[in-house]
Image (cartoon, rainbow, N blue to C red; front, side, top):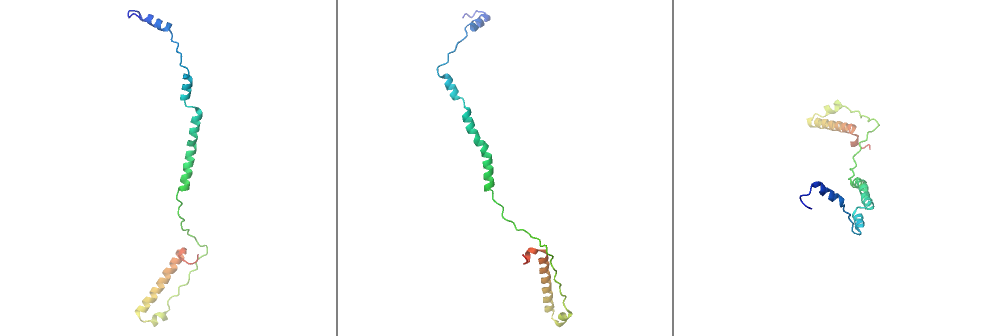
Length: 128
């Protein structure tokens, strides 16, 4: 080629001599082997469908179970209030000792408080 040739002649020369490539023998088989096959792809994808349910099942099985909580039961039977016997004047007058009167008052207060707790909190009573 002469550098003084006009450009259209160079293009005509290139278009007139089209290349005719001849692939080497076995080239097509090597290309097909290098491509990923659909069989291999389908074998690798099924574990991804089974993995999330398997993980969820493992979490459910291994999750710690809550400890049983105490159940508060309500009694349907009404609590019968025991009548509180007022202190008779004989007891107070018979004991002129102030310590004896104080002891008697504390005993009454303790029995009232105990009855109040049993009435309000049925689980403390021995009725169960």
